[in-house]
Image (cartoon, rainbow, N blue to C red; front, side, top):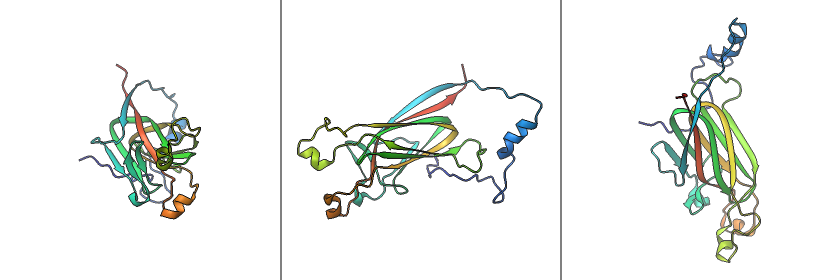
Length: 207
């Protein structure tokens, strides 16, 4: 059974609050050792996943569909955090993630929460954020009136994250919370993001 609950941020192996585990003390141990560290060599294999992300190692949580979160032609349109999320796992260590999509209202923001293979990153959590991402899809009512991809705001964003070796990743995000009269009339914000492609870099030994 694949565990597709969202990625945790706190080290489950830590016994007491404010204390470090032995692995979290790795830096100081290496510093005291007379031996030099050895660099690592490996190769990257990239897996590509596309909307609607119907894969056995993926879980999609749309969020509040009454607010517009949905599966549509633009991809998987996620509700704002923490409600909308995509979580996935891999058998090999994940070392990079690319998220390609568009905002309902630019600029967009993507959050990446990672569950590391080894819990040795104390006091930070293995989490990342990229904001000010350009590119949005055209609102449905504008599209129906003939606005096309030539509209100057229309486009895709691409956010790449290089991460410590991880076994699980959760993606969340949002666009800008700019409100227009149509949103007020129907009590519907338009701060979603639509995810189209997720590329996952995994680490494999050199052949």
